[in-house]
Length: 333
Image (cartoon, rainbow, N blue to C red; front, top):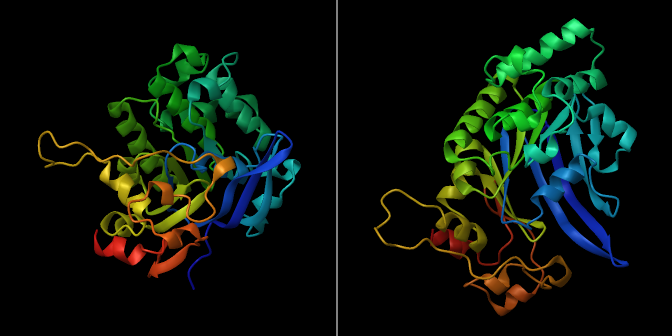
């Protein structure tokens, strides 16, 4: 029998209370991450990707709440923990040690008042009982692992004294210093130029291979998805609308939204002067979602039947999509 997934999310829903009423931000989100594999969670801004990551780590703001569903995490002990139902006390035991996160913007995530050595060392203080010399050695080793030059001399540096690429490496070191099983990376290369982005992605792949960890990689960049992921879950308006392996998704998308995302990627050999295709319109506000398919108002294949609710259904082996015209989209790919 195959090993159970590290993380299996089933019908996870999240609501935020705003102006006296509850607004649903995630609707029945489901996906699974296999041991040692990378799942990319992809979609436009406002799709619900970051809310999903915050819900999984118990970091929702006070007005946010998981209203239904499960997120089963297979801990090192072998126990299955439902992240959707953990108390903050229990979360503090596994955040950083078993599940860690690289946040989107390191300059706002790192504390400007503390040196990077102290910030990485604090993670060890929370989860491991080390003497001062061992703690310092571990921090240096971690900085060397993320390829920060002259690591020992950098311990006293503050975030503002480092470049964007270096700060991102520090964020990776901070996340991985306790060797977590699962890393959540929320758009970790968004603010970086393409050269530094390539270096960070290469670094993450190497560290994943060396440490054997699983990654939930959150991004809006389909090029990064092709480079990093084994599997993909495409989100739109708070729901997963397609899920497949990265090879299947790129070769044969089944949802018009996924097809639109792929069409927006610059490709070699594109005729000179040809414009990239753009998806018309924008993601609807959560307070005014259509009753049926949320993508229907922007979809060139929409029918009257799309005004009825649609669920994620299997369209081929290992391939699911929430579209009544999935077979036509796949035939036209």
